Image (cartoon, rainbow, N blue to C red; front, side):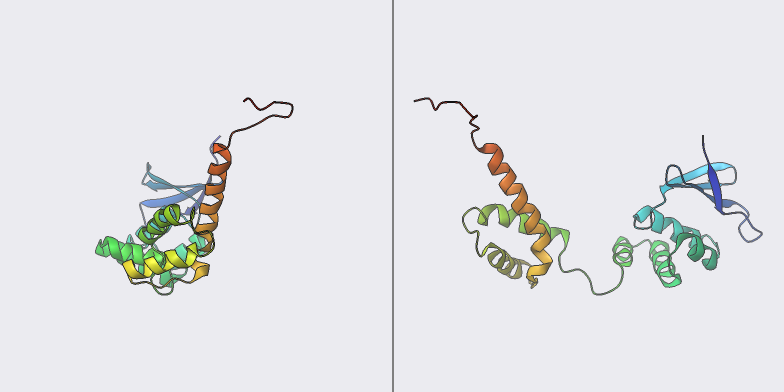
Length: 179
């Protein structure tokens, strides 16, 4: 059974678009007139959710209604809406990254660090982090703190040790070694 609750209805300023929440599936259903236009996850940290709020803002839905129903601040809405209106992908990514300076630890640097880890860690388990961070500095010109790469290296160490355990031969209790 579908249980939809209206969160943004039609008004004289917005006579066509309505947004309904399906709490059982955790989705937002966007209707254009009587036709289902779009279904997006009803999770605040999902990009589709943010872009829906920004597109509705660009479409003329009042900011006060959007901030109340979506839970985003006015400033974020206008920043996302402006990036969408310009159509510049780089601006959209920058707008979605949030506050503060641009990230130093990009996906490219993370991939490079993973590649270097696989080469360096098996032979250098003591200072691998320092060596990899130094090579990141040489290649990308970015200085990373140990705390920045710690979660990645923790995950990679666990994967490394699991793969080593799987590659070891298994012996069972009572089994004799064959000569």
